[in-house]
Structure formats: C-alpha cells, structure tokens
Image (cartoon, rainbow, N blue to C red):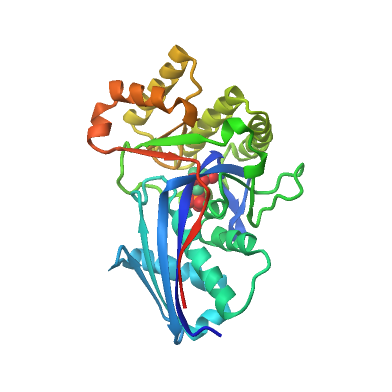
Length: 342
Ligand code: PMV
C-alpha cells in the first residue's frame, strides 16, 4: 500500500446545451442533459496524502478558504470511502476563471477533486475497472453537472430510454456521436457580472419540486435532448441553434416563474443576446447563445468562423476586450493528469 504521494489533475468546466434543472434525492436528475466539455476554463487540483487519521485540509490558491473547505469535506464524507480514514489529505485547488459566476466552477472543481481521490484509491487500494465511470458517478455527488466534465467534447447525463447506455447515476461519453461539424466548437463567454450569484443552483433545483411547470419542463427536456442528439449526429447547426437558445431561455424562465421567483439575467445579458441574434440574422453565420445559472452569456459557433466573430467583437465589444471580460474557450479533450508522485 502506498503510504504517501501527490496526485494532480486538471478538469474543465462544461456548458450544458440541454440543461439539468431539478433533482430528486441523491442527485438524481429530473431530466437528462447534454453538455460540451470546455478546454481553458478548468480547475487544477493537487492532492497530497500521507498516513494519518482522516484529516482533510483544503486550500484555494494556496490559502485557506473555510467556506470551500466545508463543502469539500462534506462531499468527501458523503463518498464514504473507508480507505481515506487512514490518511491525511491536503488539497490545493485553483481555477483559471472566476468561481461562483455561473460558469460551473463546481463542475470543474468537483470533477478535478474526484479524479484525484479516485486515482488515490487506485494507488492505495488497487486497480479500478471503469475509472471514468466511477469518477463520474462520484463527481455527481459533489455537483450534478460535474459528472459530465469527466469526458471529452460532449457528455450525456440522465436516462434516455432510447439509449440504453445512459444513466441517472453517471454521465456517458458522447464525443463519438458528434458530426464533423460539431467537433470544433468555440464558446466565448461574456463576463457580464463576475460577483457571486444571489441564488445558488441548489436552491434553484429545489424550487423545481413545487414548480407549476415542472412536468412540462421534464417533457420539454426529454424532447429537446432527442432532437439535439439527432442535430449533433447529422451536423445540423440550424436545429442546434433553435434547441440551444430555447433551453437557455427556458432555464431562466423557470427561475423567474419559481415561487419565489428570481431573475439572474441583467439588462446587459439581454443586450448581448439581442446582438448575437442580430449578428446571426445579418450574416447568416451559425452563432448562438446559451446561459448557465448566472448573467454571463456563452456564445457558441463553429471554430471555422472564428475570424468573423473576432471582427464583430472588435467592432462592438471593445470595452469587453479592453477590460478582459471575454473568455475565449472551445470544446476540449477533457481532464488530464498533471502530476503523479509516489
Ligand atoms: O451542477 P449544479 O447543481 O451546479 O447545477 C447546474 C445546473 C445548470 O448549470 C444551470 C445546468 C447544467 O446542466 O449544467
């Protein structure tokens, strides 16, 4: 048994096209979701372990951060892994993008941490059969959307009866099912507001329990995911755009029509949405938007038209460029191991 060691993983955030919104006990989603895995928006986590008595210390960018530490400890305890009782852990984590701003930092951080812990288990306990599936299942416990970050390019989480490899317990790799048209996609994120959001996703999910549109939403997501899968398979950007924007606006409409209702969008979010739509109408280029649980706008388009989008941005968004308020990301290859020291 290895008594001491250091493990490091980087794991990206992901952006859902069909959104997970609402859950049952044990993080079972009310509806299936499909996301693209990002590339440069990631968390880097280093886990140091040595023989001990189950102490866990968490650092964010090398500094203590009690609110994050509590969340991490609660998550690790929930995993209920007996081998951890014989070790002390120091976990050091950092993000390449602002956390708590609706860019799914919990997806990247929980998946990076889970990959470190699952690899530690592999080292100290023994070989794990389906490493990624187990990591995805565990990451789900930390944050639902985190289970989708384990895979490259595209993942599906949640049972779809037509696809018997799908599951509510973990995400599955959807990258092989992407048409050439969707293998290189950019996601440029307009940072409208980077401060901590007022209403957490956890509360948002909870409000779906008594939501007047709950069943309509489940139906809508189930229908949209089948159509999205088809569009991704045949390379249909037109259909993709319709579903992607419908999902984004529906997510925020569900928040507004919850009880109590709330709105995370800002006037500036709506201005950018309209500008993206105008740009599409005027040029015929396949650009569209999606939105996570926050005011920031994700602009999606094929990497092939990057130069046209850059010229549009140079014309209309100089202030964003100057203030570094645009993250230029794209679909990526998923998590990678960065460190492994015994
Ligand atoms: O993983 P959570 O509990 O933070 O929920 C994320 C929900 C959305 O980001 C709004 C949608 C999604 O599917 O990622």
